[in-house]
Length: 386
Image (cartoon, rainbow, N blue to C red; front, side, top):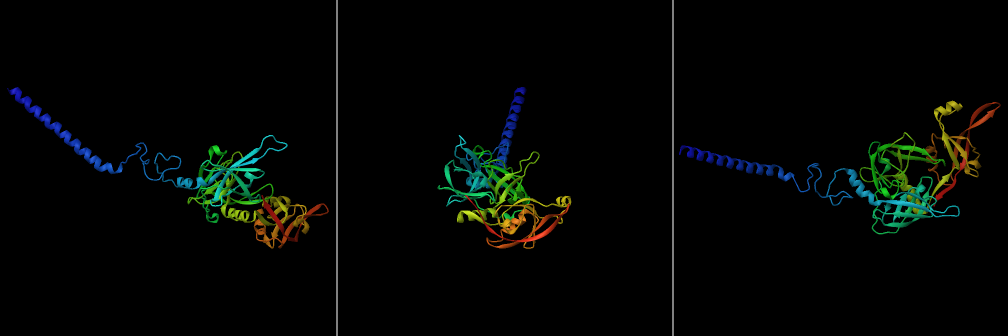
């Protein structure tokens, strides 16, 4: 009897123990839900708690419902629909069996009229130009006009539901700010690729083989073949430049360049309104700029200026300028670079007379000397069009 009472008491104790454990679990579960429940929502990825279902979808992954606070995502969403693929086709001729193609990028800047800006070198020599939109439509474009001087061209397409970009102000950008490049490197297989970097430099001067001087925006955002004519945007999603070239020299990385959008706006307006860009012409090719080292080596009397080659029949030749003359001033304003000369020329209309001061090499027996001569030059019309 004693053993039975003892067993009964032990059984009752275990019952209360179990009951207490159940109560504690229930209380703990309720507190857990109360504390953590409001923060946990459907779609939480426990491996990455930032990936939750919220309004605002990333383009290209609509089914995931992912929101991303990275501003580059918003920039890409806004600009990519306005970035198009450009294919310039050179039809077969007598000496070629197959037509050649040049691929690049373009940017729609006027949706209602279907205007697109791209690089001149993308469409130069093309007999047919194809435009591929972000939604896959392929259209034939008309060439409105092109300007080899600035490497820009304007195309026009006729299509509904186009998306256009907003132009910014390239005079208000700063070195170090975010730069986003969008284009089609290596053709349409990698259409609307997005690369990100910073503005690496401003007013970077490049001179082409034809003697044209450019002041460009430098960026380390990757610009590859096919990106030509694509968009360079700032953190606000505004277009601040049209990508044009990169330094492709072994050992150099992250040196891409874009035409400042303020210069682009001037050129495309002229191409749309007049089908050409009218500039005053001096009629010279810029062969190089005088540096301190070159001045010391050649014993020049100045350490600045630009060396010219004079075109036959040009205003410069008519005025008396010669090959190898060094232009050091125009209208008493010092010329230190090719860009300085072009900037001063742009301030004059066709028909103006400018005073061009040069340093010219002269021979006095066996000794070479240099003298200063000033020539009045009447500027003539230089046109570049498609």
